[in-house]
Structure formats: C-alpha cells, structure tokens
Amino acid sequence: MSRPLLQLALDYTELQPALRDAALLSDSVDIIEAGTLLCLTEGLEAVRQLRQLCPQKLIVADWKVADAGETLAEQAFNAGANWMTVICAAPLATVEKAHQVAVARGGEIQIELFGNWTFDDARAWHKTGIRQAIYHRGRDAQASGQTWGAEDLARMKVLSDIGLELSITGGITPADLPLFRDINVKAFIAGRALSGATNPQQVAQDFHVQIREIWGAKA
Image (cartoon, rainbow, N blue to C red; front, side, top):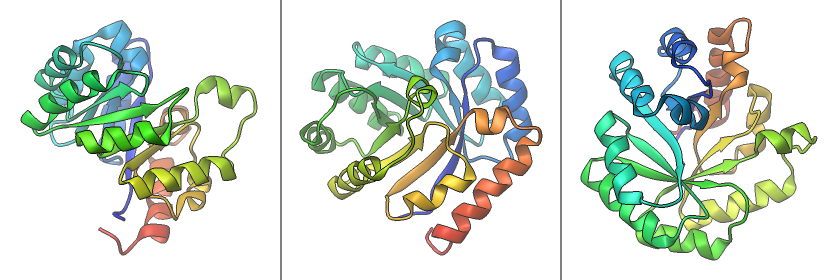
C-alpha cells in the first residue's frame, strides 16, 4: 500500500471562494477537486481555472457521470482534469467508454460508491481497468448521525482485496485516520474540515502528520 494523499474538495456553488481556498491550500494538499456542486454551477470553467491556478496539482472533476461517458470524459480531460468520477449506478458501457478516454489522456476514472452497488460490480469495474473508487459517506448520512463503523471497514477491505485503491470522504478529520490503517487508501478527501477551519493550513498539516505516523515509510 502506498502512502495516502490529501485531497481538498471544493464544494462551493460559486467559483471565487473555491479559487480562494485552492490558492490558500495548494501547497498543503496533493489533490484539488472541483466538487459536484461547483461543477454543476460553474461548469467546465471551474476545472479550467483550477488547472490554471494549480498547474502542478492533480485536479479532479467530480462529475459523478451516469451516461455519455466518452463525451464527458473528453470534456473533463480537455479542461485539465487528471481524474474524473463516474457514479457506481452508471452502466458498465459508460464506465468503459470513460476509462478508454482517461487512458488515452493519461488520466484515471474514479468510481463513486454512493447508494447501491455490489462486490460483483467492483470486480467488473476492476476487470475493465478501473483502479480507483471513492468510498463516500454522504452529507445526509452524516446529518442523520451515521458514523464510520465495522461494516464500512469490512467493505473497504474487500474492495482493497479486489484491487481498488480507495479515496475516503465524508466528514473525515485527522482523528479518524487510524481507523483506515489496514485499507488501501489512495487519498483522504477533506472539504469542510479544511475550508471551514479557522486555520486550514494547520489542519492540513495535522492530516499529513497522521498520514506519516500511520503509513510513513510507504511511498
């Protein structure tokens, strides 16, 4: 397992505060995500502006694509994304088309595990060539009091064993990271934990300290 990366999720509905946070935290994170809300309200311009502002960073277009995988992947990667998300409910043909574009552009597709999916689905995605998935505890689930539990960790372990690297999101804080020490984590995705912090750069540093303590020697 490699050492996890830290991803900033920009889930704003306006571009300017997203660019402000990206500029503030670009030296403190590894990946910058144009969140779904931002992409829906600002479109491709969000990805373009983040690429221009942060030319050396991995940029994610969190589009949660459900159809037209080839067309939307072409648009995302042309705008400067390195990775694009496809929702787990998308037909396998959509995943395959998006993946083909990603490979041709030197990028990757991430499957967003949101709602209903099965381990057979995961095996099919992996067979297609997909190597990343996002394990997502949604806003509504958090608001209803759901926490990370043994069932989540067991499912993550099976996904890791299938061969998928997981980005984990959903109210993640530095204190949560020891829970995931046995999981093949690609990245920890933090939105409000960073953008809503009084000192976001210090919180980012706290994430990195925890990551190094748990996964330190792994590169």
